[in-house]
Amino acid sequence: MALHLVPDLETVPFRVLKREAEYEIREVESYYVAETTMPGRSGFDFNGSSQSFNVLASYLFGKNTTSEQMEMTTPVFTRKGEPDGEKMDMTTPVITKKSANENKWKMSFVMPSKYGPDLPLPKDPSVTIKEVPAKIVAVAAFSGLVTDDDISQRESRLRETLQKDSQFRVKDDSVVEIAQYNPPFTLPFTRRNEIALEVKRLDANF
Image (cartoon, rainbow, N blue to C red):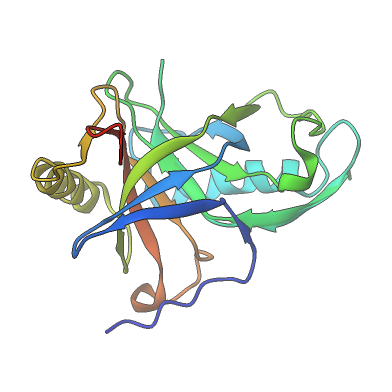
């Protein structure tokens, strides 16, 4: 069994609605992210990931209109895209997300909750601030390095497994989202990653 080492940082608030052997269902509260489009067609090549991570980290650590240095959070999210400063706290995770209609991946940092909608504006035009609305997601955790082929297989497996769920179904417009909780230098077997798909309730009384 792998030992997952996760930084002690602010993360996205959620509550677990249901646990199964291969996944869990979470109700996630709304939150804000700083987001940038990644270069290339892969969300997980080292150069593209590093470049996007550095762009977002620069915003977080002061490249913004108030020179605010914010704290780091976790995880970092990655998804396939849909069509000296204030220093912020780092949060976790970093998120990577993929949409059905675009070939570009997007990386986002979760913003410290204390700012709410009052985040400083980015100086870099490639960084955008957006609110992610509350949602319900099915999440499967895994360790190791993240690759495009691995994510494709894990997404197919999660979708297939969820077809047997009597209470939740994958939403028609759901796009795969990857959360990575560890710095790039973390040993593969100690990394914590998650793959998520947005779902909807089948039973309104659940």
